Length: 104
Image (cartoon, rainbow, N blue to C red):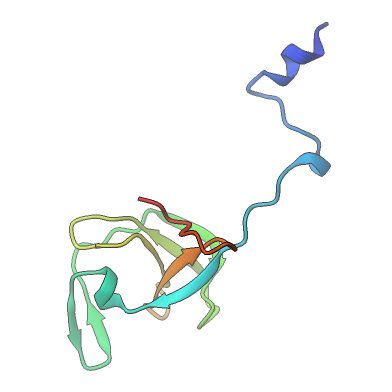
């Protein structure tokens, strides 16, 4: 049996000690007016028709209440970002070297 062909198989998984850990994201809170079209009412910012695209492993650094939601560019969203459903804050995600993690 040829082991090289086994490794090229779609089912091959490297041993645990050879797997790369996922990159740590650094989160920076963003002003919602800078990333989403909406209207500010007192201390609340309201926007229509915003769809989240999935739940991330990161939790909100402000409230710590749950996993952040991924929001990609769409009709009312100017910048891809992460969103906390609990405290309604927006965050930019960056890699350790300062590179944006959410590339359009």
